[in-house]
Length: 273
Image (cartoon, rainbow, N blue to C red; front, side):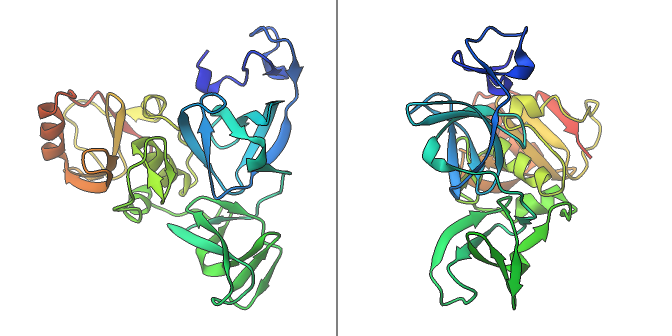
């Protein structure tokens, strides 16, 4: 079983895995939500970052120990560790942040102090509205920056382009820092389409594009450990360590550059839409 997608850590496992994995304890899991603007999902307590979770995202806590929670993210099934302090009681979300970023404020005026910077994809519960401000249990957000859950954007490539020049960050999932698979996941998620968190998992999604067939907008191009979104048959966007940012490139030039760097040829072309 893939560690990233298996809700078991040697101390506990979800009840659904009984008979499939050995564990001292099986649990139904405890619902919770992320209570930080951006939280690193770690491979182990105090370990390396695998991915990131955003404000309001739902999780299932499988095990708590020594201040750490082992959990599974609702959006993609990714498992890992967060500090218990990064979690709060579950809260039914009604809206999501549909702009690259926004702020959560103390009150419904621009002069109020901001409490948190929220990134594209963050989830909130709207409980009221004051003028152009949406009220949540944690503060106020400009209503024009939100959409109701289910009211998705239409074009993943356009979403990715809204994050142009975002700094590259390994395992990143926000406008503060993002990597190649985080960009692809966030772009498709904003359009109501689920993708896994890592590029090797994403490469199994959708349908294969035959070698030599022209690419269409929103097709995914894969190299070993890397993914880009096609903007057109000959243009792409990706988060790359080559420039440490989200950038656009001509596809033939990118293929030649990556080949020259010794990182091989594209391995997959996949059509999600």
